[in-house]
Image (cartoon, rainbow, N blue to C red):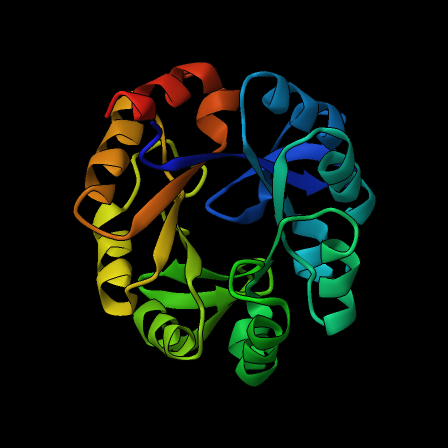
Length: 247
């Protein structure tokens, strides 16, 4: 039985599947021409969830790659969660009414927290995830181009108190670096909120995956997002799935 959920990641920019280094739009590597075909590959390898991010949407504040996301959600028989460019209730409805399992609210949660809370109340905490992307513990917004004055812990506690049950926590300093995840920061967020925390950023090896799975036994960490390590062939998705199932 899998202790934690694995979320292979598909970051979309310019219609392609890419990865950024520490969230830097100028340090981009293109890994595939079709986000849908990448999602299809992950589904065929046993993924139950796919984590998709609309990088253009995050930067521009509007949906850009929604067709790719909805196609994956409706055709592949997997759960899809999407973040990036979601700013209105109409955006949330667009995804949730077209097969997407969960929507991640990031920048909007910092700029308009009451609106984000209204989404949780209207659509349910199972379908609205709060995305916390942090630089040195402070939450960043707009595709990580701006840093707020709020700490991840502070924002996490606010939303947990207002019904949020799941957070995606990204340590920007480790994202796309293959240097290992900041497990401690995730544990602190889990402890402060009591909510499920999905680890994102820095996974480089099966040992990293195993360490997150171990941490999950002592906290409310519930999943891990894996991106560059799979694209760089550090390990395969089936290997990672086997690793967490044996923990």
